[in-house]
Length: 463
Image (tube, rainbow, N blue to C red; front, side):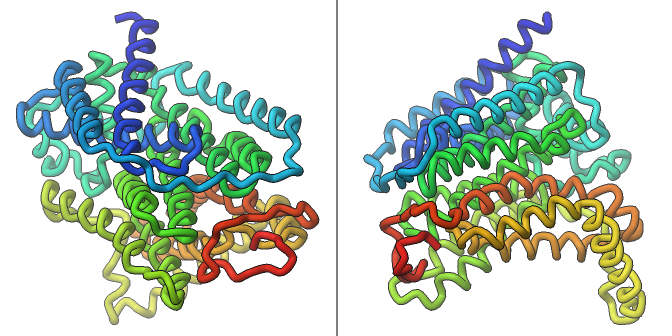
């Protein structure tokens, strides 16, 4: 198979995945912009495609293109049978001060940066260490190995490949390899530019709907320019899909904080499932999101936090329950949980001090200029619709600090190997929070938000 044929088949496979996701989104995609629907379609399609592939592998021992497409057709047919009219018809917020020229320029910047990542992704086979040792290895095994469960989870020779990790990325790679007809690293690498494109569209579409088109274009451009995240080093790993997952959870949660319609709750549940299925850090993010939702809605006189918390936590529990059922008990090689036993407590303060010293004295100092720029921006802008999610990001960083403290290989090694990579996955969703803030004097108003969620503002400015 030539490279051109493999790339063409992969493009067609991505289109089929998006079509499956689009058919599912018809059940609960009311009120979304076209850009958002495209992003959600890819995420839902990846979930469905992975489930179809896993079902065929477990039931029939193999999953070629014909079987996968048959499963896709069943999903589409089921969505057509179950389809109901969208109930959520929320109007897009209009900003009279949006500058069309600025939107176009920012969109061109985002498109150019995305094209650079596309070229990097397909220029050579995927070579990142984590791809070769974890995600790509598992994808190859899922695609080729006859004894799937034995090789993925129970083979002692592969204990170093983290059999306890979530499987959405490896199963997606294996499913696309089945659709392409072969394991072709350069063709399969198109999944990562597709995930970045979905991330940019989700940011642009959500902020265009809830804030202003210029805010959406700005967030997309800023995220696309994050070359340390969208670069060749992360092609084949879980970082780029995880960044998409964080953005989808933030968008869905902010919608539910505004109104907990059944469609918005369904999207929140789908975002939660996608997030926890990509990487372990996604589970922590979902837990913190549920905590923020509880705090925000527990005293609202006309709202209940239970439906939103259930939409976040039930998919998390189901995912980990199924994964534990399939994998069995797995040792956590990265962490020394014995440090939490009373007789090891004396070692914790020194480890925690090392972590704090490195994060504050080294990592923060290295990023001092952008941190000061962000602080200045926050000082001169009013509160935005995303400000309620700041505690989620703070808690996520705190979780990473705790993980470094409990690292089985020492805090310094854990920070050197993981901290910047982990922070980068938060950056696209961080741009959502930044660009959701309305500059002073812009005169933007947001209508339709329940008073129990956002207090009234006599100046007419969105909080």
